[in-house]
Structures are given as structure tokens and as C-alpha cells.
Length: 444
Image (tube, rainbow, N blue to C red):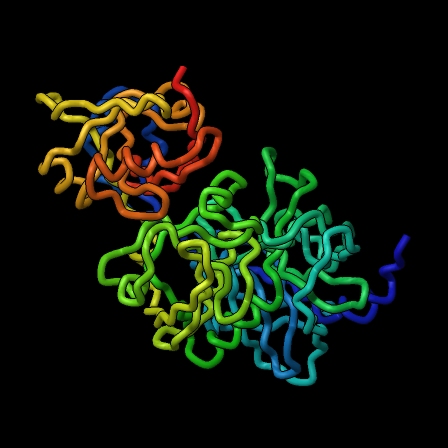
């Protein structure tokens, strides 16, 4: 078993306790509590105008010192809405801290205390983290300062719901409320991550915790220190993961990359000539192991700086130069439109028997509502189509990496595929497009 005593002794001195005080305002009834229960006053309570009452809330977290002159790293959620922040060192010295900057998307915050000659942690310069390696967490769970817990790296490059910019490190080191913002060390005593979140159904540790990789955090910190905020690039595409069937349909042998399923109009991607069906293999020479790598890599590029994307298109690799623009808050929120089939008469339906599909062309009004040039509405799906996950109400807008322009084009594309082969259909469902791999065969 590994011995963590040296790491705790040498690095634990730079781990701090962070306590915050915030003012919470809430509406309360204007009637005095002593009148509670009086039928007369209870009757009028519902008509009494509310008044704002304030009370103080305190919370605890962790952090670590990254420079001798008092810069402290922690989680953004630890100091969010705090009116006062106190940093306590292991030798019991206390300092008031100010927030230099905070980035909610990465959950990283940079604090500054007025002190010098402080102990500092050693940051890992090697971003490579291996599943199975031993790790040590130090923090203040439930207020118990400088608590050390150990475990292993259980996974890496984990994406959490609504989070596309942090490839979290998953560990089974015990992390509980109060550990947030504390460091995660490797056996060399280097910080490889910031403990940020836990997966729990009870509110306490259940064997799964997540840490922000230190290279991601330091990129954020440098921007917070120099600019006070974080800027990220975006190119305006929607993507999905590849599976074996989709990769095969595009002629791609290696199951890696990000499949583009939609491109925003007038976006950097559109201006660069990217279109649905392209598969991004590399960003600035860095290969993508999965689709989740694309938002992070594009986000790390400063807006306005040209980057070269290696694209798989028409069964060959091509290079595309794109200039990311700045990611705004509204860009991170997707607007989904629910598509409902009109009750009025539809154009004549067309059957594609080998797929188990019954299709009809969209009316001009439907195309306008969905914002597409052309599409085929799925009226019925059975056999191969049902097994692929297609369902009535889906709209097919592309086939084999090409935008759909006619029913004749669709029929020609699918009839040209040999039985048992897979073809990629670009499908819109409730305003969101994705590629669906469909294996051509006899209808059932």
C-alpha cells in the first residue's frame, strides 16, 4: 500500500479552510408570530403584504495556495454570492480574502489574501492521468480541517450533465461537503485536480467523486488573473458521438472524433465550409478521442485566432481553417422547438420497404417552422427503422452525409446500399438534429 504521510506533511500546509458568510433575503408574513393561531388574524394573514427579512448563512469549503504572495485556488460554487470570505491556514492564521475572478462553467475561482512567504502546493506539469493510479485528497469535510482521504483514479474525461468544458477526473477518494475546492494529489505530491463534485443519493460520499484537471483549472486561473474573466471560443456546431455503425457508414475505421450533426447559419463553422456529416478528427493537431473533446479544445482557443481542423469528409481527410468567435452565455443554452404534425391533409406518402419506413414530404409551412430547406416526415417506422430508433414525427433532413433535397435523392441513396450495410440518416427530432445509423434489410 502507498504511504501518503510524506505528502500530507509537506503539501498539507498549503491546503486551507475557506468559510463564507452570505446574506439571504426572504419574504415573510408581516403579522407578528405572537398572533399566530388567533382566528381573526389568521383570516387576514393571507392578505398581509410580505416583507423582506434578512439572515446570515455560513458555509465551508477548501482551497489551496498556489503562490507565496497569497493567491488561493478553490471552486466557484464555494464563494458564490459570498459577502465575506475567510481563509484559515493550518497554523490557525486567518485572512480576509477577495475574489479576483470566478468562472461558473469550469467551477474555478481565484482568491487573494494579503500575506507573503506562504507555503504553496506543487502543480503537476504532466496532464496525463492514468486510471488506477493512487490519489490523495486533502480538505475540510464537514469542517474537519486538513482531513486526508485516499483512493484511485476511477475514470477520466468524464462529462457531467450541462457541462461541456471540463473533462473531469473520477476518483473513489472520499469527498464530502466541505472538501469542495481542495486539491487532489498524485503519489509524487503534485496537484492533479481540484475536488469539485460528488455523485450521491444521500448527500454524502458514495464512492464516486469528480475533480477538475489542474491544467484546465490553471488555464482558467491565468485568464482570471490577467483579465478578470474567462473567454472561450465557439464555432457554432452541434455534435454527437460516433458508434460502430455510424463510423462504418462514413467509411471511418477508427472509432474516434466528433460527428457534426448541425451547423448554425452565419457561424464560424458555416463560414469555414463545415457541414453536417463532417467528422472532426483533430483540433490544432490534437486528436479527439471522443466527441466530448471538441467543446473543450475549441473553448480553449481564444476568439479570433485561426485553428486548423482535420476533417473526415467523403472518406478522406481534409484540413479546414476556422476562426472561433467568443462564446456568450446565450450560446450555451440550446433552444429546442417541439415539432407537432399538423392535422390537415398531408402530401402523398411514400414507402421505403427495405427500411420499414413510411414517409411524406414536409409542406412549405412545416419547412418554415423547422427552419429546413427540405425534409421527409416519418409517418411510420417498423422493422429496421424501428430497431434504429426512428419514430413517427422524426424528420429526415440528410442521408449519407449529404443534405436531403428530394424524395428521389433519398430513395436513390438507400436503394444503392447493399443489404446488411449501414447508412447514416440525419434526423431532426424536436428541433435537435442527430445522425442515426440504419442497417438496410428487408422490412418486417
